[in-house]
Amino acid sequence: MAFDPNAPAPLDSGIFGLPFTREEAALVLLPVPWEATTSYGGGTSEGPAAIFEASKQVDLYDLDVERPYEKGIFLLDPPSGVVEWNTEGKALAQKIIEAGGETNGDPALEAALARVNTLSAEVNRAVYEASRKVLAEGKILGLVGGDHSVPLGAIAAMAEVEPSFGVLHFDAHSDTRDAYEGFTYSHASIMRNVLDEIPAVTSLVQVGIRDVCEEEMAYTKARGERVSVYFDRDMSRRKLRGETFAAIAAEIVSKLPSRVWVSFDIDGLDPRFCPHTGTPVPGGLDLAEAVFLLSEVVRAKKTIVGFDLNEVAPGPDGDEWDANVGARLLYKLCGLTFASRGLAALRP
View 1 (spheres, rainbow, N blue to C red):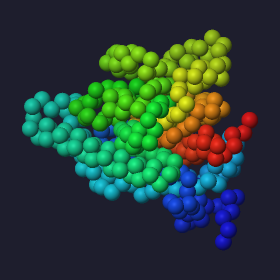
View 2: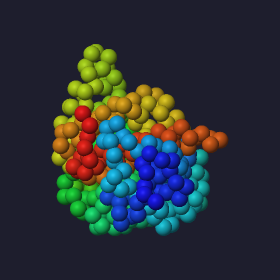
View 3: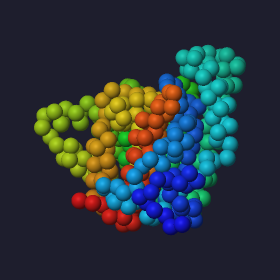
């Protein structure tokens, strides 16, 4: 039977109700259900599965890119071991978090911390290997987390095929802490780890930041022109004084190099969109602003080399709102990535 993009998603279909195999798809999504170092709300390891289920309700005609599905999108299984590591790691990390992030010489806590850090490194390795394989096949790579620690291995793999690129980072948090609560690869340290470990990332442009510590302020300032931070406070003031978001978006895009990885923590949005995310913060971008900014990246003829979407957590008692928003944002990321590569047309 021929695929009908206007029909309901078949029960045995792939993400977004699509029929494509890995071989047929131009864009391959890697789910990483990991959240061991999450220090506040939980549930983000269930995000990839929840997004997959919600994706079956997304209409395939897109008002920005029209038919992103035509080039093919395929969702892989999680890397081997990650589900089991997450169960073990969460249980061990919780003991440290309950102790205030301090081991205080306790042998049991020190052993637990060491094991969580080992498991985190294993996740990075597994994501790196899976990402490297996808890229070797000539596919476009997208990651679906999980907490925001998960894209490090993917960005490292991207650096092997992209000698120089920038990261456009949507988030409520700077994520440049040093080993937060002792966890070397914490969700609160992802951008510090990217900057410290991946020299191919020549610039980091952060958008929506509104929860930051002094250490992060000092760290990002010390990076000079390599890091540009667009704080939510400053962006809001500029808009309140009459400046258009289009002007702000144009300035943000001008800070990016020609090739860009998009790292999207869902808490970069106003929490009315995804209230059950791990660490929600008042304020933030409207979904329309985020999509507009991504569209401006495409209009500026910059190429989105890959992306990650993280921190979507399903609500309690079957509440699907967060996954609903996450699935729609994921489809936008796929479509705009295609458009940036000339594989689809961006509508005016």
